[in-house]
Image: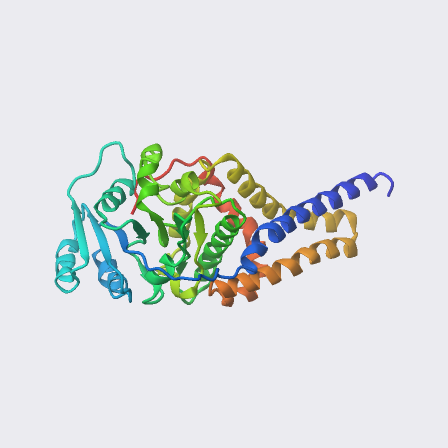
Length: 375
């Protein structure tokens, strides 16, 4: 027993350290979203808005989802800028039909790709330059607003100092366990970027539901510094321009957008690889904090099992793990309720264990070359 004592101490110490790191994130970052209350305004001002959507060969999605944007209840000046990016399907004719009924639909047609500019950035830049209003609201062609008040609620996040408003881009609830995995990962991502923003360290947004001022875009020369990247028009751009004084969040469930989730595990992993290839380019302190959280989450159960096998300090180990489990459960329940994902809460222990395997699956994105196709 004497020879095993140092190993026992090391394992228990390592496990306690990992749990302490996790508790730091839950209590310093994630708790902020759990206790967040929408700021009260003395005066509500509606800003003229330009909704910008880029689409390439997405006639079916436009037919299904664009009406949800076009019928928004918004009394102030607004337009929908739809960038038809080199589509070869029926998008052109479909948009012309929509234009007959909705005069505020501004169609921007692109007939050639921009050289040396990868991904979605060129069509999005053209849409922003064509927008008539200062306040921009971005979403994707495969997204639909959760309510007719989406536009009003998202712009309500602005005040005199705010230039960027982060929204929640959820996935539709469907049968099957893959749907739960996709939605939990989406929730986890939102939990982090909302909480970091509330802590004064905004680091990303999602293009499915994101708003910022045109002046921010032009002041930072658009996407010029990240044009070589196939993605990053949302997270990398926000990572560069957002700071604690100019960024707000809107989490009202009626302000969410809803997207169709992937229907196969391989398709979902391909999508996640593309997203994670940009995270390595975040500012150093953001990348460090995100990596430390992921690393600690990855190690929890391997170290837990190892400590149980080799130390047999069951009560001590269970107490350490139980403290995190309790705090985690409370914070996740409250934040899931706020983001309209409460049906995921009974599964949170499984998702916690699943995280180990998720990180194994997504690890290749660290060195994998990004896909140049944005669609």
